[in-house]
Length: 311
Image (tube, one colour):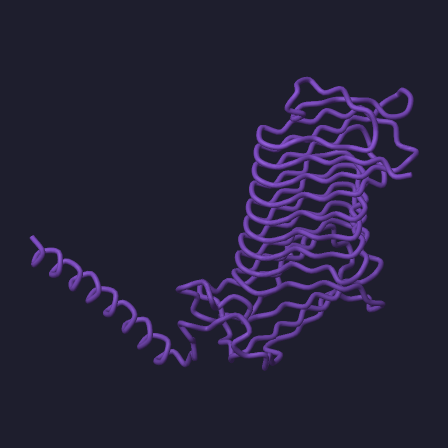
């Protein structure tokens, strides 16, 4: 029996060795210098691989879709949209971004299946950077997607609708103002100075959510991580859900609202009077101010809830 197990293990490792050898030969033959064990930050020598400017006249949507790499935005006084791609190894032409215009939409994407660094064990992340310079007068829609990389808004932006999707990476921003904001990060922290919107939907599967100023109505959800929100205002309602992590909320003195909180394993605390439904202190409600009341609902499966009214 032991001999059979040994033979099976040898066969499995032989197959893995053949696959890795074939990949290595392929990349060498095609002129690439990929590093299978390339840790993040392996090389900080990022060089410009491509840059392109495009006019935004009659543009209603800017769409970015990349397989890997950090994407950063900043606003400029230039009248054109500018995209700069940097990498720590030479990119072939088919690995560089492309720009297409279809009607009123400008699409910027990376068609390459392989990222700049071969990411077999998840250590190649960060070998490419995309910088996007947005004209200050652009205030229409923007969609941003990356499978592996951070998304950063280094300047204040005002848009109509903003939608961001990332499979792995952090989201960081300055002040974002938009009619609707949707941010979905499967693995990474989400930190922003301000979200000022009519409607929001913010989700992360694994990571913390920290919003310094939040206005509008919508849903905040984390599967694993803490949620910290400082409300500036609430449109009609705010629903906050966390499966595993603490929820910490603070509200302005002038805001009138009805609060409902529930945690399966944890307790609820605040600096105003609440009506607790049991001795465990894990389910409570209360009202602050005078009618009409906005609604705040907070639920967590494993973690504490803290809500404070600022003095």
